[in-house]
Amino acid sequence: MLKAYGPLIYRSLAIVDAVVSGALFLLIAVCTQLDFAGCWGAHPLSLSLVMAIATLSFPIALQGLGLYASNRRNSLADVCMRLLAASAMSSFAVGIAATVLAVPVAPASPFYFGSTQFVILGLGRLLVLALLQTARRHGRNVRNVLVVGSGPRGLRVRNLVDDHPGWGIRVLGFVDDTDAPVSEELQGEAIYKVADMPSLLRREVVDEVIVAYPRTMLVSVTDIVKLCSQIGIPVTVLSDLFGDELPPPRVGQLDTIPALSFAPVHHSTWKLAVKRSLDFALAGAGLLALSPVLAISALLIRFTSPGPVIFRQERCGLHGRRFQILKLRTMEQDAEHRQAELLHLNECEGPTFKMRHDPRVTAVGRILRRWSIDELPQLWNVIRGDMSLVGPRPPIPSEVDEYRFGDQRRLSMRPGITCLWQVSGRSEIDFEDQVRLDLAYIDGWSLSTDLMILARTVPAVVTGRGAS
Image (spheres, rainbow, N blue to C red):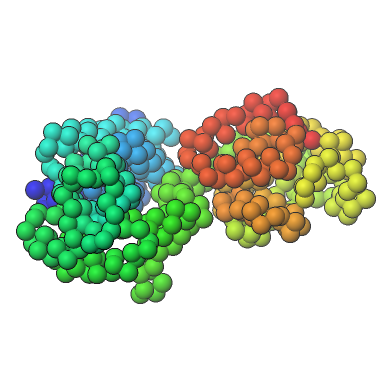
C-alpha cells in the first residue's frame, strides 16, 4: 500500500511541512514581539518574501537531502542528522532573508524557528519512521527481494538483510547460472536459474532485484537489467561489482549519456553542503566578532614595520586549484626572498619549511603567531570558498612539486584554517605525520569530526603548543 501511494504520501508530507513551517514562523515572530500589523503595513513585500522563505525552505531542504523518498534502508541516526541539517538550513535562510530585507524580527527568532521545526516536524518524522521499523520487524509492510548471485556476494546481501529487520525485506530466493558454485551458508535456500527468471518474475510478487554477481559475470548483468526493466521491477546493482578497491560511484550524466563517477573521497554530497553552509555562516560571524582584533593588529603592524598589513601568498587548494591565501603580515617585507639563505636551518623534514626562531619574524608578528591571530584573514578565504574552517592546510606550489604520488591526495578535500595535526601539536608534527593525519581526516571525515577539531583548536591556540 505504501509503495503504491508513495508519491501521493510524500507530496502530502511536503504540503504539511510547508504549512506548519509558515505557521511556526508567524507564531514565533509574534511571540518575540514582532508587530505583525505594523510590519505588514510598512513592509508588505519584504514580510511576504520572508514568510515565503520560511514556508518553503524546510521542504526544499528535505527534498534536496532525500527525505521525500523511501528511507527504509537508512538508519534513524542518519535521518536525524539530515533533519537537523534541514532545520539549520531553513533557520539560516530565514535569518539572512530577514536581515537583507530589513524585516524587524527578533535576532533570535530564526534560531527559535529552526529549533521548533526540528522538534515538531523532525522528531515527528523520526517517530513515524521508528513505528514503521517496528511494524516491519513484525512482518508488516514487507518488500520481497530476489538476489541474483549465490556466491559470497549473494551471501553478504542475505546477511545484511538478516542484520537489519527494520528494513522490512524478505529474500524470496537466489538466482544464478547453472554451473555457479553456491555458498555453503545458502544451502537449503531457494536457488533458481537465470533461465527461470522470466517465469519467476511473473509468478512471484517481486518488489526489487538485487544483483550481487562477481565482476567475472558482468556480461550477464545486462540481460538481467533489461529483463527487469521490461517488466517494471527496480534493479539494484552492487557497485563493488567493479572491485573492492574502488570508491563508491555516483550516478550522473555526460550530456545525455548515463555515467558512473568514482570519486576519490567517500563523502556524502548533502553533508558537504552542510559543511559549506556552516563554513559560510561561522566565518561571516567570526569576521564580524573579531573585527576589533583585526583592526588593532593591523595598526600595530602598520606602525612597527614597513610593508603591507595583509600578506598574500599563492597556495594550492582543492585538486591543486591555485588561490591567494590571506594572512596578517608577521615577517619582514623581504622575508620570502631571504628564505633560500635559511634553508639549511629547516627544522622540518620533507618539503615544508619550519624554523622555530625565524629571524625574519617581527616582534609584533611573534605575538600574532603565538595566538594564531595572523590566520584570521583566512575567514575571508572561507567565505569566498577557497578554504574551509577545517581541512588539510593548503601547501605552497613548490611543496606540492616535491610530493610523492600518494601525498597528492591531501588536495582531494577543500583546505582549512585548522586541521587534525594542528590541534595535535601544530609545527611540532613532522611532514610524514602531517600527511598521515590529513589522510586520516579525509578518509574518516564527518561533521562531528569538524566540530571536534574546532573545539580542540581553542585550547591549542590558548596554550600555544607548537606555535612558531
